[in-house]
Structure formats: structure tokens, C-alpha cells
Image (cartoon, one colour):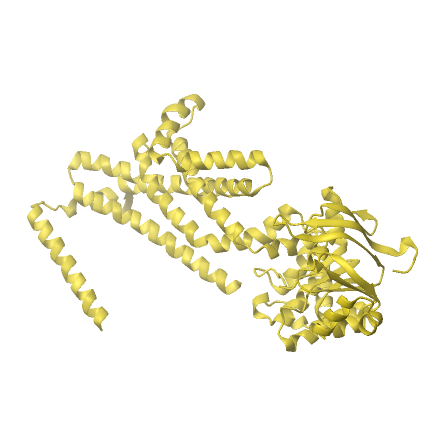
Length: 250
Length: 253
């Protein structure tokens, strides 16, 4: 990455390592920086450590060594720091993970009330605005299992946004969707990127990557093979492995 | 059609068995003497008989034990799943101790050993023994329910910034309790039935009252049938009530 003012970085990851008990070394001396308002797209074959990296960023996985700093807060052994970071970092999962026992509205209200200490009225107002933004305000009183996959994922995005996060993580957000529903979710993600949300996106949607990303990283075996702008990676990759992967996937 | 024929055959067989059995037994049935032990009414004034008095005690003990057993069960389950080694050890020890000794022995131990030391009433001893016993089983049910909730629910909850406790309280437990309602009901039914054991420490519950009347009247068959029918009524009512709740919850989710 080109030299930039360090103050700009909202995420600073330095030399992190993560090995799973089964011996898989998911991340090896992995370092990366993300600037505010930047959309970072991570691509790579399955098992390359992309998802593990995202999950380390908000402390869902614990790193073995190295350091992660998000918005000036170090993600360390302190519980309080981890909670602080999770408040500022929203996450969207491949499998939606909506709360099935709560209505769509309560799904989105929950964290606002419990974590942001908002009143139910305030929370509902925010939630309804977000539901309008993702295009399904009429589903507020519905339970998640009555929604299509695309609608569920849009609710999940609204739920994460309700915390007013500074960073959004997308972990293969469209991989579990039927083809005709991928578009509606990508549309919401594009809007977010257009509004200047800082995003780290793991995806196989190369069209989206090309259109929206400010910076792209190609990962394999827990480390970065190549990084650069989408333009460079797609048209003129330096590494043979990058070329090979992209030719398989495109 | 074949089911109907089979059912009639079974019914006929059962009837024959009962009539043949009772004739051969040569027992002098005196059902007319039973009602007065359930209740009497003079000049329109209703007075509960000893059996109803006993039922009241049984229900009191069961209700109190319900509450404590499920509380103990939930706390034990949370301890067993906690990251604290001490909590896991204590809860595991309690569970194994209670599950691997007979309820009757526990009841006698609490009544004859602990109650004089701590000056506990018979009623309280009974409730304590039943709560500890059923609580151990309830804790395994709760634990199974909690671990059956997909990891993604925890992750979604954590990623929104909820604390471990809030995640339990608002996300995981509400789902877990719904899932374990059927086995929890079986446990509640067991509790009602196991409460009969408290008659051994002279708590005047339904069973104890029955024994007392039988000792006076020798109406052994009639009274045991009656007592069984009363227990059956309670447990069936309980099961149906939970079935209704379960259905409602299914609609809501």
C-alpha cells in the first residue's frame, strides 16, 4: 500500500497469527491497513483464511500473536476493549444469523436498546428508517423465517447498521443466497459504500469487487499473495497464482 | 378398519381380564364408602375430605419444588457451561452426587440428618429434597437446550456488542427454553409423582392421607385406585396445559 498518514487508518492489523487446534495455520504474519471510508475486498480460495481474518477483527476468534487496533482501541485481553470494538464494528454473516424468536423489528431494536441504551421508541424509529433503506419496511412485524433469504440478509444488514458502526464486515454475505436474490443484497452494500461506510468484504462476487472496492487483497494459505486496486488485480496481476485464481473464478 | 377390529379385541380382552380377575379375587368392593374421604357436603356446605386436604399439600409441595428445581436446574446448567473451573466442578459434583443416589435416601438424609441441624420443618425438608433431585435432571435438560442453539446465534449477538449475560438472557435462553419444553414437562410430571415419596417422612400429602384411611378402613383397592386417578388427573392436566403453551409459541415464532 502506498505511504499514507497513519492517522487515517481505522483498522491496523500487524503480523497476526492464528492457528486452530486441528493444526490449520489460518493466518500467518498477516498485516493490513484500512483507511476510513475505504472498501477493502478480500478474495481467495476457500480455506485461505479470509473469514478467519474477518472474525478476528471483532474478536469472534482470538489471535495467537500480533496486534489489531480498531479506531484507536487495541483488541487485547481486556473484555471492555473487545465490547467497545464490537459496538463500532458491524458484521453480516453468510448464514444471516437472525434471531428466530424475535420479529424483524425486535431483531433490529435489540442491540440499540441493550447496548446503546436507547428507549424503545427511539430504537423503533431508527429501525424503521433502516428497514426503509433496505427496502422492506412492510416486514417489520414478521418473523425472520417467513422471509426470503435475500430479505433476511437485508434485515441482518439493517440490524448491524442500527448500532451506527464505523466499520462493516461482510463475510460472504451473498454466498448462501439463490442467484436471483444476490442482486438485492449487493445493491444495499453498494449504497452503503457510496455513503462512505468503511467496509471489509469477503466475497466471490467479482463484479461487485471490481465496481465498489478501493483496494483488493488476494489471500491464500493465511497470507497475502497480492494486493492492489481492482483494476490492477483484474487486468495486470503480478503473481501467476493471482492470474490463475481469477481465471478460474471469472 | 383393521385398527378398529384390533382395538375392539384389545378392549374385550381387557374387560374379560378385569371381570375375571375381580371375581376370582373374591374382593368385596365397597366404592360407596370412598366419596366421603374426598369431600362431604351437608346442607349445601362443602367440606374437603382428607384426600382433598392431602391433595392440597401435594400441590403445595410440587409447586414450591417446581420453582426451586427449575431455578437450581438453570443455574447448574449455566455453571456447567461457564468458563470458571470452580463453577464447573461444583455443578458437576452436585449433579453426579444427586443423580447417582436414590431419592428416598436423599430424602431420609435431609430429613433425619440435616433438618435437626438446621431446624427445618418437614415440609421444607420435602421441598428441599425434591428440588435438589429434580433440579439435577432439569439442569441436564437446560444444558442440552442451550448447546443445541447454533453457534451463529452467539456470534450474531456478540458482534452486536451484547455481553455474555445479555446474549444468554435475550437470545439464547428464550430459544433454548422453547426447545426443551417437552422434556421439561416430563420432568414436571416426574416431580408430581415423586412427591408421593414425602409420605415416608410423615408429610400429610395425598399418598400419606390415603395410607392413613386404608389403615382405618381396609379399603385398600378402592383407595389406591382413587389416589392413582387423582395423580393421573394432575399430570394429564399439566401435560395438556404445556401442550397448549407449546402450540402458542410455535404460532408466535
